[in-house]
Length: 340
Image (tube, rainbow, N blue to C red; front, side, top):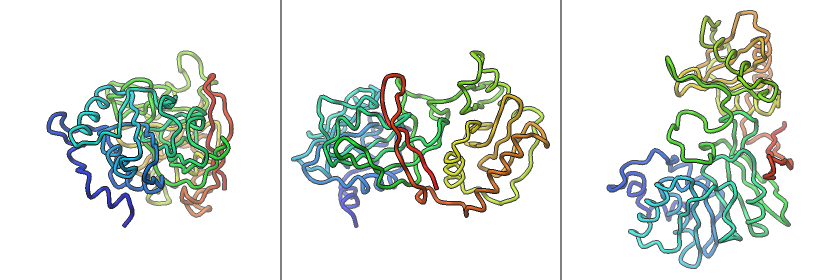
């Protein structure tokens, strides 16, 4: 039993996720994953903790129990409705050392810094410098981070900050909804890096890592998605069931500029290769979809899959992580890179 297991036994999960006054909230994470992340965070009594993504309020309640009355919990969310209800539910339970605020979590919350621990339940586009500036020396951050500039290519990273410098101590499988600058109501569509989407006759979308080479009409993205949806070539993947966490991490670690992700049907992601003239992806169900049987992108994709198989379908935890400084439009931060 861990400390998180102990406090979880005292926090009524359903009271937060399915509150009688608010009703069920879809903005919540799997409790087992929340417990894993908080165990990794190693919260101690008296700590000052900030979480990015209030959600139902359940994770904040667990943190409040872990820090105890001598500690504080600051919870941030862009959605004022979620924040208001979480504050009320915490108050109902007599938790007066957790406070929820409406804020863009990617900027942190300097009013209550420094923090001994930070945890994110949403994925920023990179590790924000603001977080490093607000964490105490020797503090820990546990957060999902992208490993490629397309949606859903993430790992959860455990990061130690010493002397203002971040060091990744571990990565493991996981990811959460993309952080956005306004409340997100469509939880099926990625919140970032969608280069084209169709809403009729059914929802579909595509993300291309080479978007900077596309034109202002998104011609490359539109054409690639259209080729996957109409008169496409389909074939089963010969390698059997696709281990999605392993495959998507391997594809991201290739750092290929033609990397592409798509959703041709709801709840069925696809990863592959595209150019202005060709496109091919493999879906989660093991179907390869391409613009033609002789597609150059299909040849590249088959090569990536072969390399993945030869590597033994490596788990995300086996990669070597590193952080690189990056200026993201004036808001500095750090990119996470994985190598083998």
